[in-house]
Length: 106
Image (cartoon, rainbow, N blue to C red; front, side):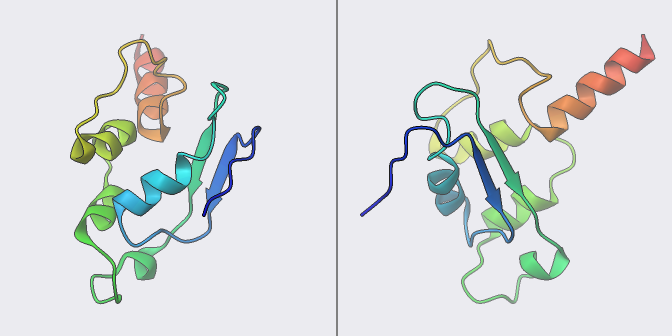
C-alpha cells in the first residue's frame, strides 16, 4: 500500500532511514510527474551509530560522505548512473558546494 500524490516536490527526513534502499524508496515519491524535487536528510552522530538496531552500513557511509556526489552514492548500489545532463548547481549538496568553490576560484 502506498501513496502517490501528484505534486510532492520536497521530502524531509528528520531522522535517517535504516538503509539506502528504504531511503531511495521514500525520496522516490517526490518529482514523479517530472518536476524538480528536493530531498533533505537531517541526522546527527547518534542517528548513525553502528550499535543502533537495524541500521545498515550503507546508510551510515552515505551520511558520513564528504567527498563524492550524493546522487552517485545513492544510485550506484542499485546499478543506476547519474544522468549526464544534470546541472551541478542543482544535483546535490556536495555538487553545489563543489560548483561554488570552483566559481570562487576563477
